[in-house]
Length: 234
Image (tube, rainbow, N blue to C red; front, side):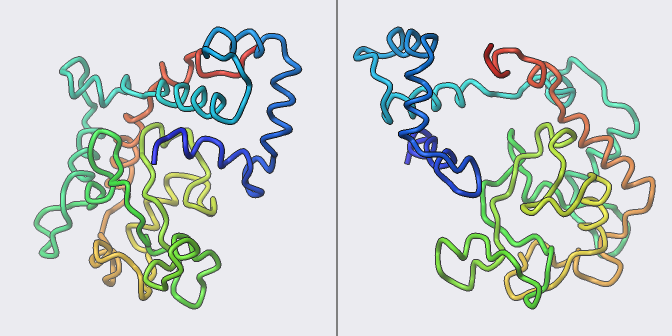
């Protein structure tokens, strides 16, 4: 599947935009600006499903965040504060049951340049009796996927509240507290939560949590957030 194949689905999803493609095409056809743009962009100049999906695909391909403080740090162009550096180490360090080294285990799921493993996972929000949204299981029709959701990117996570698939957490502090000591066991909880689920959880103290938050904020890209190319057109 290509990104263009996905592009039209949110428009028609009743839980997202709840629109019809016929209505969207009608709106675009009534705008001379869009009529002219489609003529410039496509050989046939037609405002149809295919061309709309191609246009949306190209726009989404252009939305790339790569100028955060952490990106600058990786390129040797910025220095992390002491707190941000401690948070970075926590983020990329495994939990040590002996307590000799502190680790928050974040990197297992939030890996790579986009800080996601692109996998569906149950991150311990609820136990089996409290599954109100079966997540991936509604697509695969298997109980093995109950309460599994796609791991999100952490880029610009500072400005994307509320958090989790259902928006239950309003702040990143709440998210960190969840993973530190409030994860819940269930039949599909990911194996990577084995230490989170132990009594006492990851044992991060107040300063550790502040440091981890400071690091997460280094993933914010101001140039991406203020780029007028990505804003609503006049």
